[in-house]
Image (tube, rainbow, N blue to C red; front, top):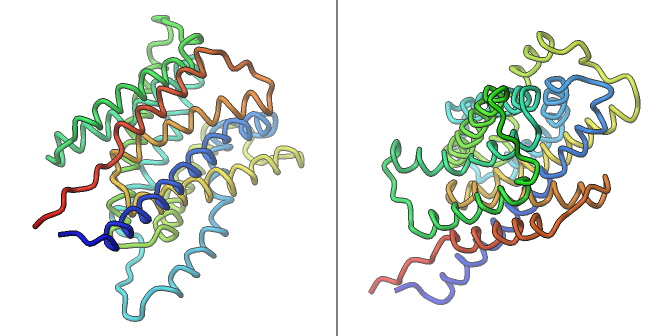
Length: 305
């Protein structure tokens, strides 16, 4: 039978990991604001490259502290298969996300990108052969409804934009794959190491893409450079780092649903900073997302004995 002290430790571990996940979602949710400020300086693919590349020094410093604090004799390996796959998946996510934005409306691209948890659940169930709880499915439905309500008034059905919409679906697939690969990498490496190593792979891929597809790669104003630096430190190092911390303790399926808070944060930041309207329907969408996350929360196992 589980003792009260064991249960308390498990609940504390969940609470801290959940808090990290929520803060990570908020940090990633502000990234569109920084992209908007940097848009006059660099192209969209270059913006994605700088987001990751500028975060590498702080992630490296964090990794060195993490390694120094590791127990003596702890196994160490660099650039494991899961970390490399996570970096490739995140590069795919950012690449197709920007292709989607260029080929369809921002609302459509955002809506289809929110389908990432659906791919996490499908891969977990069909490929990894792991059970998905009824609460998770219910939570997913609430979160998808909430995501649609957040941006539904701007959605447009246009056959001319079908390619861009499909790019949005591919974006969701890669982001879902990122969740699963980071979760796998965290089984054998620390959060800082996984985030740094994945970031090295992602930035190398995005640099090639930016040079090939963007005419403006290097920022030429202080405003653009500061926006890129803020996105790197807050959204990438902070957001992705906190996500990696949480994925070492929480299931990838549940974590992917919590990232719906990113859409809520983006809407709130747009309202506070850019004076974008926040309607009653959008507020209802945010509430549905919170209900979905609550419904999908991991349930404590019944005590044995």
